Image 1 (spheres, helix red, strand yellow):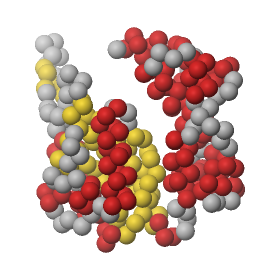
Image 2 (cartoon, helix red, strand yellow):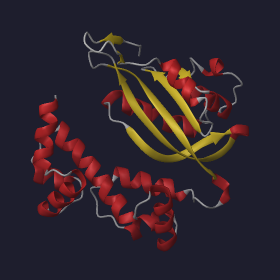
Image 3 (tube, one colour):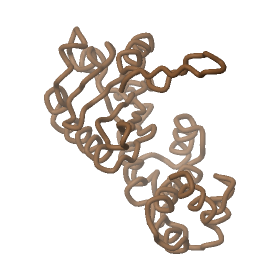
Length: 253
């Protein structure tokens, strides 16, 4: 990542097309509830902010640079984070607002939303990833966010093609359905039913963009057992039919 400045002949106004990693890291120094990081294709940290360094027990950011998650996190968390990184680096698919456990100062576990994107060079090759983990400011031991919730959300992401309901997800989380609905509403500003639908539609959009499968087959693979219902839901969410979405994405390539 670098800075490229282009000056237009007519307007003479510099245009920034890329910004340096150091600038992003500096920006996130002023957002103490958010950990910022950049990693290379080997999973090594190449840039972090002070918040992340302190969470994993380092006083200086430079002490964390060059290390991998397996060197700074407990085995179970490190394995989970490493698998996430490997998937982003291999497929280029982002991870958006994933609820998970993280570490706070003094090694106290807590909840956060994590987002990760692949970094590509000018030729489109993946050369690393960038991410943030945004605190929920709710300690894991406070009882307000049960540990089973993350498991239920992981199940939704992995099995969106199956028959799912708010009640079944609440049962998997070990939470009464009413409390589960309130928790989902507070965290995601949506209902459990809408969360299930959004997860399926996000998966469908990836299938439409990356595969040649017929729309009806994609609908079924994403948990929609009625083609017309899938089309209505997709149009309501995107303003386009699945076919129109696929055509528009191919025109952009």
